[in-house]
Length: 229
Image (cartoon, rainbow, N blue to C red; front, side, top):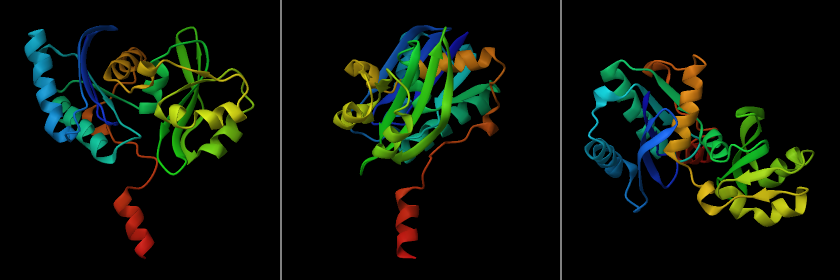
């Protein structure tokens, strides 16, 4: 099964094509251009270099957030368009799941994405025998509240840019935390594709009209408007 996967939820624009779990080609761009400028050229490069066409794809995968509001909308809209044209199934995957899946190590994994002002998007996952489950909910919260909530768990592996930003606080509140290599903290379309394949095999793929972004908080414009009111 060939999977076209997109992740535009962070500063990195990542696109890839996989054959089942094997990466055929991945492309990334972080040159500070907006995702609207760089996404489709990267997709074109993927198809040109792999000699594949849209009709060769069997499944579409997309990161639905949380993360950059604009980036998420661009990625979701692009995948929805591809799915509409082809009639193929799609799987939406959260950025927090994707980060946890970078590791695929047995035990507790906490994905943490920096949301500024000591706030983070986070999710706690338990991996066992190549299966993962969410412990609790995916949330936006203050980093101190997050650590107070999860400090009953031992030997947690932390992943994501929020784990780097708040490393000292994590060390002070969590018993025996583990931190990963820098590359594993990056959000990538490859992990999104591999999760999508798992979900497809479980019968959880959907049609394009069922794909929606997950923000976990209101946009800056909405918050500003509420502040004015």
